[in-house]
Image (cartoon, rainbow over all chains, first blue to last red; front, side, top):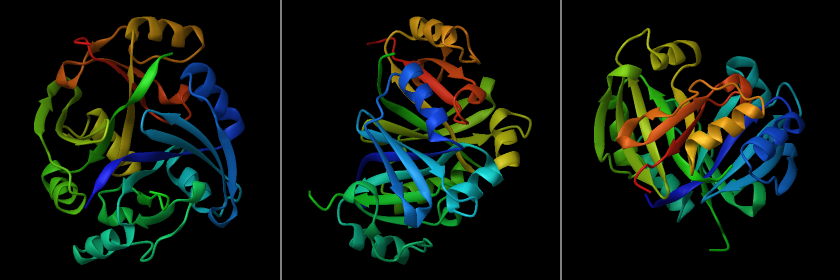
Length: 136
Length: 136
């Protein structure tokens, strides 16, 4: 598999409005976008540090995946996203190796990326996203 | 604060021996070092992807911080470490802004870095490490 870098970290927070001042004023990062992703029932805030984005995730519905995550584990890192070249081939390869896929086919994620998730039961507890930039 | 990139992700696993084949054979990363850190009661395995290291953490004692983390939350991302220039000044600045520090002074971490942890109660749930490379 050709993983190039960590594309982003998804971090579950109760309120992005409450968390943004910490990321901006303490860590010194700049929130460059806020985006709502209705199909994931989240509102997201984006920051960039080096090669990696930080994506704060606030649930817009307690029954959504991030709402359930916070209820179970509290605020914290929700998923790790790796940048990959050739997403569909990668998914096929990963499935052949016995990894349980949440998405068998790539779908559209935030910022126009093609994305797919691997199940944390197959990845030693880390909900793992693979992202491909279709413009590259 | 001058954060340059994500230095590493600390990922808690029950067994690094069990997890290494996933990181190597599925994700295609290479384990380049295994190190025991007795004061943290962990055994660690290191991988590199882009600017960032992945540090698998296996507890050598159920009462150690990683052992307790796994008992409470299961396997998964344990901490996020940012590379910073000027660690002591940064800690002073962060404390002035009201962040609760686990380490008020830098201490030695893995790979010869100077490190300090911020308390997750002040960082919206993410156990946060700041790292400075004394050779830079």
